[in-house]
Amino acid sequence: METIASFIVDHLTLEPGIYVSRVDRDPATGAVVTTFDIRLTAPNREPVMNTAEVHTIEHLGATFLRNDAVWSSRVVYLGPMGCRTGFYLLLCGDFEAVDIVPLPLIRDLFDFVAGFEGEIPGAAPEACGNYLDQNLPAAQWWARRFLRETLEDIDDAHLAYGA
Image (cartoon, rainbow, N blue to C red; front, side):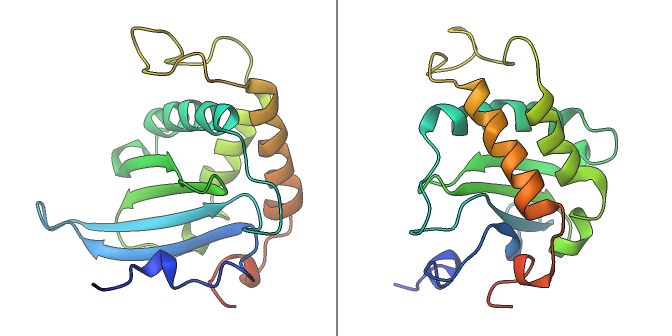
């Protein structure tokens, strides 16, 4: 069996950042889809996020992305990594990390999470299968940390695997 691309990346040296994990053609539609690895923690060297804050970032992030005037039509999926160190973002099109970082998309997404007030979208029993597993304050802490420590002065080392 062939090893998938994300398991080839050296997780002992991977830093928080935004990386292109793969660019493929969707076999059903033929559309090009870019998968981004939005890594909030250094794997195996920092604590992982708890499921509640991951779940909250997912709800807020998906809501933000699906309502973005420029990018909503290109959003295929935003979801957590099983290891709880970050998220996968799938966009229609052939992109590089530098295509979405300088643009307001990723910064605005994490600004939205960091400053969100009110009821978490979709956090109700009729809308979510685990609606009680939410933690807005912790999600906001992770979003502020990512903005401050990773996105503020992001460089090539945090935009390309092994750079």
